[in-house]
Length: 296
Image (tube, rainbow, N blue to C red; front, side, top):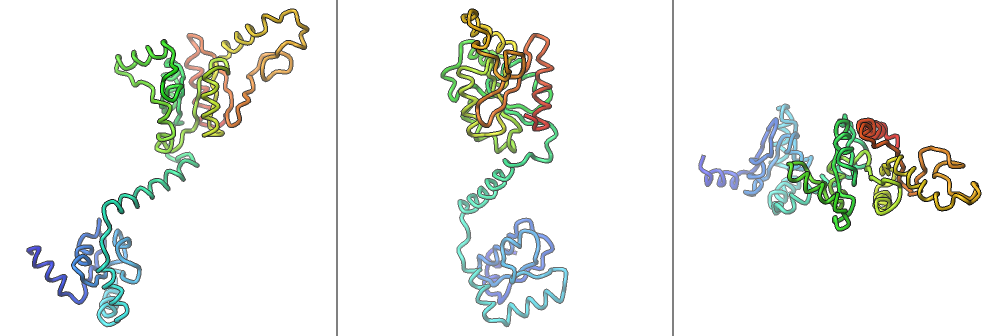
């Protein structure tokens, strides 16, 4: 049927009735309304978003169809409402996009509070984690690697060269830390954000503090126990002549004994790993299992 004929039929119709069992978008219904015809349709699929409840009927019930037609032709107030629907301005693409974006944002907001039921492996953000450990963790978890600074301005030469080597070898260079807030909701919320803090001090600790302020309860300060022990030993060495009770004890202990140190940053916990040549696999397993169980 030529388009101009179809438009004329719509414009001359006393009532347009679509007893559709299913519509993908409902284009015929929209066309009818755009041409000014009072329109009614089946109560299903996308038609429920196009027409109000009283303009819909059960399409599989002949009695319901007949009742809708009679009402649409004889009920004057009801016909006026149908005419008003036909005369309203169609939504713009911008309005459609804004409405869809609002739905997505609401879903992301809800998803960020819960771990997706479909996730079989933990989703981790690794911030400044050494490449060897990050690669090992990727065996047990889905990971996104991030630089340890917001803009990379304070990266050491070794870290910078490592990133360049990754790019040269076809690997993925770490993402900028500024991208983490944007990517986190799209991942359904990271199970844990792992920040590498070699000895629980220095610039890396400041990064973890900022992360913990924004994602309390999900941030982990991952540190090398051997490096921390050495730092504490170096700190203690100049005061060997002091009484033992005056010497600084290892964090998390009562008198210098060996244990996992406490971490004073609110919203973050510390996790000790060994990073010797043969320890990456065990360290990665420990990180992934703890994230899977939300045991940090």
